[in-house]
Length: 228
Image 1 (spheres, one colour):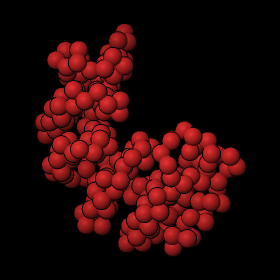
Image 2 (cartoon, rainbow, N blue to C red; image 1 turned 90 degrees about the horizontal axis):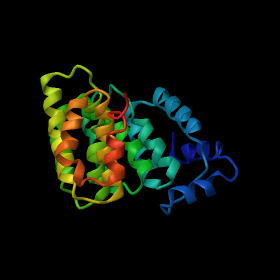
Image 3 (cartoon, rainbow, N blue to C red; image 1 turned 45 degrees about the vertical axis):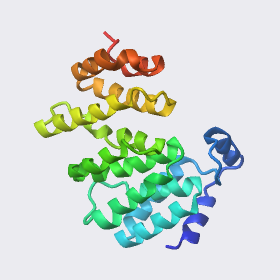
Image 4 (tube, one colour; image 1 turned 180 degrees about the vertical axis):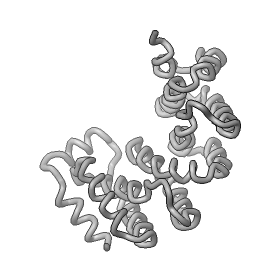
Protein backbone atom coordinates (compact mmCIF):
# COMPACT_ATOMS: atom_id res chain seq x y z
CA UNK A 1 0.00 0.00 0.00
CA UNK A 2 1.34 3.43 -0.93
CA UNK A 3 1.01 6.64 1.03
CA UNK A 4 -1.38 7.97 -1.61
CA UNK A 5 -3.58 4.88 -1.23
CA UNK A 6 -3.67 5.26 2.55
CA UNK A 7 -4.46 8.98 2.43
CA UNK A 8 -7.20 8.38 -0.12
CA UNK A 9 -8.73 5.78 2.17
CA UNK A 10 -8.60 8.21 5.09
CA UNK A 11 -10.10 11.07 3.07
CA UNK A 12 -12.95 8.81 2.00
CA UNK A 13 -13.97 8.52 5.67
CA UNK A 14 -13.91 12.27 6.36
CA UNK A 15 -17.07 13.88 7.74
CA UNK A 16 -18.16 17.31 6.45
CA UNK A 17 -17.23 20.10 8.84
CA UNK A 18 -15.27 17.86 11.17
CA UNK A 19 -11.82 19.00 10.01
CA UNK A 20 -12.56 22.60 10.94
CA UNK A 21 -13.81 21.53 14.38
CA UNK A 22 -10.71 19.43 14.96
CA UNK A 23 -8.37 22.24 13.93
CA UNK A 24 -10.11 24.61 16.35
CA UNK A 25 -9.99 22.06 19.16
CA UNK A 26 -6.40 20.83 18.79
CA UNK A 27 -5.02 24.25 17.83
CA UNK A 28 -1.71 22.87 16.55
CA UNK A 29 -1.27 24.11 12.96
CA UNK A 30 -1.34 21.13 10.57
CA UNK A 31 -3.72 19.56 8.08
CA UNK A 32 -6.82 17.86 9.47
CA UNK A 33 -9.00 15.61 7.32
CA UNK A 34 -12.01 15.24 9.60
CA UNK A 35 -11.89 11.44 10.04
CA UNK A 36 -13.48 10.07 13.25
CA UNK A 37 -11.44 7.75 15.47
CA UNK A 38 -13.60 4.64 14.90
CA UNK A 39 -12.85 4.81 11.17
CA UNK A 40 -9.13 5.20 11.84
CA UNK A 41 -9.25 2.26 14.25
CA UNK A 42 -10.98 0.04 11.70
CA UNK A 43 -8.58 0.87 8.88
CA UNK A 44 -5.54 0.48 11.10
CA UNK A 45 -6.71 -2.92 12.29
CA UNK A 46 -7.31 -4.06 8.73
CA UNK A 47 -3.89 -2.88 7.59
CA UNK A 48 -2.15 -4.51 10.56
CA UNK A 49 -3.67 -7.80 9.47
CA UNK A 50 -2.99 -7.50 5.74
CA UNK A 51 0.46 -5.86 5.60
CA UNK A 52 3.65 -7.55 6.67
CA UNK A 53 5.92 -5.87 9.21
CA UNK A 54 8.22 -4.19 6.67
CA UNK A 55 5.22 -2.82 4.77
CA UNK A 56 3.64 -1.53 7.98
CA UNK A 57 6.83 0.17 9.11
CA UNK A 58 7.29 1.79 5.71
CA UNK A 59 3.68 2.99 5.60
CA UNK A 60 3.80 4.21 9.20
CA UNK A 61 6.90 6.27 8.46
CA UNK A 62 5.33 7.80 5.36
CA UNK A 63 2.09 8.59 7.17
CA UNK A 64 3.98 10.21 10.04
CA UNK A 65 6.13 12.28 7.69
CA UNK A 66 3.01 13.63 5.97
CA UNK A 67 2.27 15.60 9.18
CA UNK A 68 -1.47 15.17 8.64
CA UNK A 69 -3.24 14.72 11.97
CA UNK A 70 -5.15 11.54 11.15
CA UNK A 71 -2.18 10.15 9.24
CA UNK A 72 -0.01 10.43 12.34
CA UNK A 73 -2.67 8.74 14.45
CA UNK A 74 -2.87 5.96 11.89
CA UNK A 75 0.92 5.59 11.86
CA UNK A 76 0.89 5.04 15.61
CA UNK A 77 -1.99 2.57 15.44
CA UNK A 78 -0.21 0.54 12.76
CA UNK A 79 2.49 -0.20 15.33
CA UNK A 80 0.24 -0.66 18.37
CA UNK A 81 0.56 -4.39 18.85
CA UNK A 82 1.62 -6.47 21.85
CA UNK A 83 3.86 -8.94 20.03
CA UNK A 84 6.14 -7.88 17.20
CA UNK A 85 9.20 -9.93 16.31
CA UNK A 86 11.70 -8.51 15.79
CA UNK A 87 10.78 -5.10 17.16
CA UNK A 88 14.05 -3.34 17.94
CA UNK A 89 15.36 -1.91 14.70
CA UNK A 90 12.18 -1.61 12.61
CA UNK A 91 9.66 -0.62 15.29
CA UNK A 92 11.30 0.62 18.48
CA UNK A 93 13.79 2.72 16.52
CA UNK A 94 11.01 4.19 14.38
CA UNK A 95 8.96 5.06 17.45
CA UNK A 96 11.93 6.78 19.08
CA UNK A 97 12.46 8.86 15.95
CA UNK A 98 8.94 10.26 16.33
CA UNK A 99 9.32 11.51 19.90
CA UNK A 100 11.10 14.81 19.04
CA UNK A 101 8.15 15.59 16.71
CA UNK A 102 5.54 15.44 19.48
CA UNK A 103 3.70 18.75 19.65
CA UNK A 104 0.16 17.86 20.73
CA UNK A 105 -1.31 15.61 23.39
CA UNK A 106 -3.47 13.59 21.00
CA UNK A 107 -0.65 12.59 18.67
CA UNK A 108 1.79 12.05 21.54
CA UNK A 109 -0.66 9.87 23.46
CA UNK A 110 -1.52 7.68 20.46
CA UNK A 111 2.17 7.22 19.69
CA UNK A 112 2.92 6.42 23.33
CA UNK A 113 0.30 3.68 23.24
CA UNK A 114 2.42 1.99 20.59
CA UNK A 115 5.53 2.72 22.65
CA UNK A 116 3.98 1.18 25.76
CA UNK A 117 3.78 -2.20 24.00
CA UNK A 118 7.44 -2.06 23.05
CA UNK A 119 8.47 -0.94 26.51
CA UNK A 120 6.62 -3.68 28.36
CA UNK A 121 8.01 -6.19 25.85
CA UNK A 122 11.52 -5.17 26.93
CA UNK A 123 11.62 -3.19 30.21
CA UNK A 124 15.38 -2.66 29.79
CA UNK A 125 14.26 0.17 27.52
CA UNK A 126 13.35 2.15 30.63
CA UNK A 127 16.99 3.27 30.52
CA UNK A 128 16.18 5.10 27.28
CA UNK A 129 13.03 6.59 28.77
CA UNK A 130 14.94 7.90 31.77
CA UNK A 131 17.05 10.03 29.43
CA UNK A 132 13.84 11.68 28.20
CA UNK A 133 13.27 13.17 31.64
CA UNK A 134 16.21 15.51 31.04
CA UNK A 135 15.08 16.67 27.60
CA UNK A 136 14.54 20.39 26.94
CA UNK A 137 11.53 19.33 24.84
CA UNK A 138 8.45 19.42 27.10
CA UNK A 139 6.56 16.79 25.10
CA UNK A 140 9.47 14.35 25.43
CA UNK A 141 9.55 14.84 29.20
CA UNK A 142 5.81 14.34 29.37
CA UNK A 143 6.06 11.20 27.22
CA UNK A 144 8.31 9.59 29.85
CA UNK A 145 5.28 9.40 32.15
CA UNK A 146 2.67 8.57 29.51
CA UNK A 147 4.65 5.68 28.04
CA UNK A 148 5.25 4.16 31.49
CA UNK A 149 1.58 4.09 32.54
CA UNK A 150 1.53 0.26 32.35
CA UNK A 151 3.58 0.25 35.56
CA UNK A 152 0.66 1.82 37.42
CA UNK A 153 -1.71 -1.04 36.65
CA UNK A 154 -0.41 -4.21 38.30
CA UNK A 155 -2.36 -5.33 41.38
CA UNK A 156 0.29 -7.88 42.31
CA UNK A 157 3.56 -6.48 40.94
CA UNK A 158 6.78 -8.43 41.02
CA UNK A 159 9.82 -7.01 42.78
CA UNK A 160 11.14 -5.86 39.41
CA UNK A 161 7.86 -4.13 38.65
CA UNK A 162 7.85 -2.45 42.06
CA UNK A 163 11.40 -1.26 41.47
CA UNK A 164 10.35 0.19 38.12
CA UNK A 165 7.32 1.81 39.75
CA UNK A 166 9.51 3.51 42.34
CA UNK A 167 11.98 4.55 39.67
CA UNK A 168 9.26 6.26 37.65
CA UNK A 169 7.86 7.95 40.75
CA UNK A 170 11.36 9.32 41.22
CA UNK A 171 11.16 10.87 37.78
CA UNK A 172 7.77 12.35 38.60
CA UNK A 173 9.24 13.89 41.75
CA UNK A 174 11.83 15.74 39.67
CA UNK A 175 8.99 17.23 37.59
CA UNK A 176 7.16 18.77 40.53
CA UNK A 177 8.75 22.21 40.17
CA UNK A 178 7.77 22.37 36.49
CA UNK A 179 4.51 24.33 36.50
CA UNK A 180 3.72 23.59 32.83
CA UNK A 181 0.10 22.43 32.66
CA UNK A 182 0.85 19.36 30.55
CA UNK A 183 3.64 18.23 32.90
CA UNK A 184 1.50 18.69 35.99
CA UNK A 185 -1.36 16.89 34.26
CA UNK A 186 0.95 13.97 33.40
CA UNK A 187 2.09 13.65 37.01
CA UNK A 188 -1.55 13.68 38.15
CA UNK A 189 -2.51 11.09 35.51
CA UNK A 190 0.25 8.71 36.63
CA UNK A 191 -0.66 9.06 40.29
CA UNK A 192 -4.40 8.80 39.68
CA UNK A 193 -3.97 5.53 37.79
CA UNK A 194 -1.51 4.25 40.40
CA UNK A 195 -3.94 5.02 43.21
CA UNK A 196 -6.36 2.39 41.90
CA UNK A 197 -3.78 -0.36 42.43
CA UNK A 198 -1.25 1.02 44.92
CA UNK A 199 -2.92 3.67 47.08
CA UNK A 200 -0.20 3.63 49.72
CA UNK A 201 2.53 4.63 47.29
CA UNK A 202 0.25 7.33 45.92
CA UNK A 203 -0.45 8.69 49.40
CA UNK A 204 3.25 8.63 50.21
CA UNK A 205 4.12 10.59 47.08
CA UNK A 206 1.42 13.17 47.78
CA UNK A 207 2.53 13.49 51.40
CA UNK A 208 6.04 14.30 50.22
CA UNK A 209 5.29 16.38 47.12
CA UNK A 210 1.58 17.21 46.99
CA UNK A 211 1.98 20.65 48.55
CA UNK A 212 4.27 21.66 45.68
CA UNK A 213 1.96 20.42 42.93
CA UNK A 214 -0.52 22.67 41.20
CA UNK A 215 -3.87 22.44 43.02
CA UNK A 216 -5.69 20.94 40.00
CA UNK A 217 -3.00 18.26 39.66
CA UNK A 218 -3.09 17.41 43.35
CA UNK A 219 -6.86 17.04 43.26
CA UNK A 220 -6.71 14.88 40.14
CA UNK A 221 -4.01 12.64 41.61
CA UNK A 222 -6.06 12.08 44.78
CA UNK A 223 -9.44 11.69 43.07
CA UNK A 224 -9.88 7.99 43.87
CA UNK A 225 -8.20 8.22 47.25
CA UNK A 226 -10.97 10.52 48.40
CA UNK A 227 -13.71 8.04 47.62
CA UNK A 228 -15.02 5.90 50.48
